[in-house]
Image (cartoon, rainbow, N blue to C red):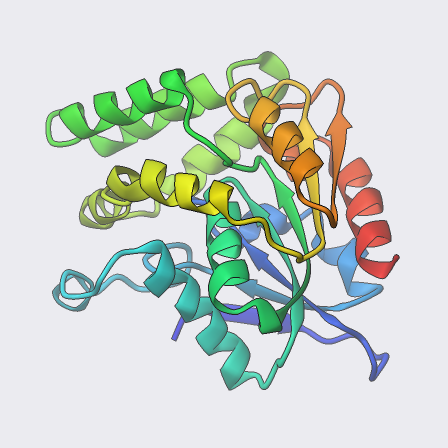
Length: 259
């Protein structure tokens, strides 16, 4: 069972919001959301397999299947344990892919979704990064590789805080776990193409930073295609809107979920 923390709103009718972090992060990256969201919802924070407070047992994890399907199912298992039938979801970066997987496999468990730093498609630049990573992952120390990726995705000075937080959290990963997660990149392009073919009817709010140079264009196009989706573009902001522009993120996300 994934490590998780829950925060209950005193309003007995409060809906749940499940927060899903990205690869190399942990549930702590939502620290600027917790207070604001607790005023309106019950909140569930999860640490994904091998991340944050989840203790890595290499003997066990090496035998597990690493796929977006199996990893997202572990989030559902936490909901089942807590008897949460349906919830809103909020995800960042790779966490948005896990939520998109849940929209396909467990649509009845999802009310609305907030996606920031959304990965919709791999362009030539991001594909090159993945090839570079797979070529050098057994040569370079994994933290060097992670820092390179962090700087390329979040290159500007105003991205420094969110970049440093993700690098800090990634240091908690074991190299063996990093390599297992990085293998997911080999199937990433295929699964994103499959998602693009399937228009869904789950309400989604994309909150994207104007400076999220790798992913913003495709998020705009996807939001225009999906009948129940909206997009908010935040100026002077990069990949991790919930950290760089937390107040704006919270206002827009909560308004969408309660609307």
